[in-house]
Image (cartoon, rainbow, N blue to C red; front, top):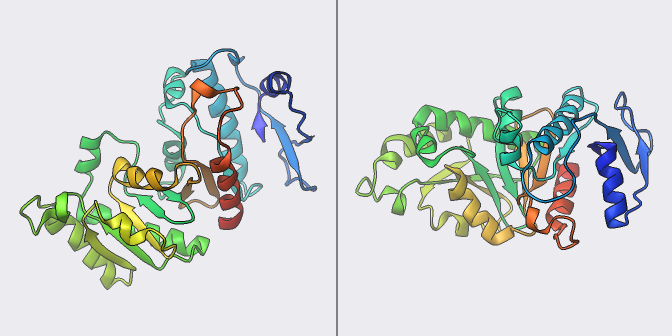
Length: 285
């Protein structure tokens, strides 16, 4: 556990918690099982109140940066992050929109994926304005993504044997009548990947591809932009879904939901997604 001791002390007092924490200097892996705490100096955070605050965004980034550094050294095999406020990071003057963008700046092959018992989804692009995301849909960039995703899945021994590629347009373009992207870019990328032995199929109409994957843990949907993948996934698994970053020397997972400032500190939050994030990090690493 990485954080500021003052924040931890405030949480102990407000919430009546007494976690059994072992101090850890981060130099070597903890020798004993249990929860270890690594203090990370940060600007004085604003603990009271709710909503995004620049000082808190800076603090959360410093905790994350320290943990990533230790994972990069091989001291950690997996990293589980809590939700962060992208607005708070922006107020802190950080140039990354979120965890995945920072990781991608260090590991260009990083892929945002989502996992639950009944569905798996990988995103070709994630935190981009929709117009920018659409501009990235080209045969060569898609083929590069398919290659990287296949390597990532082999590395974590996920059991996935088929990648279902979503189309972009209604009815997957209807043979060009409803858009040319499937004909000109997406299908050629899939066909080129299949010639290389990649387990690809599609493109499938975006409104039905999730039905083909639902309940089939051996299949993963490759969605072409953030909301295309996340609407279907969160409808199915909002309470239990996990965000996993693939394509790095270590696994990083996170709950698939946001900060929920409106219920912070009230004891009303559902912890199941965080619990599943920890379990998935253990399994994939």
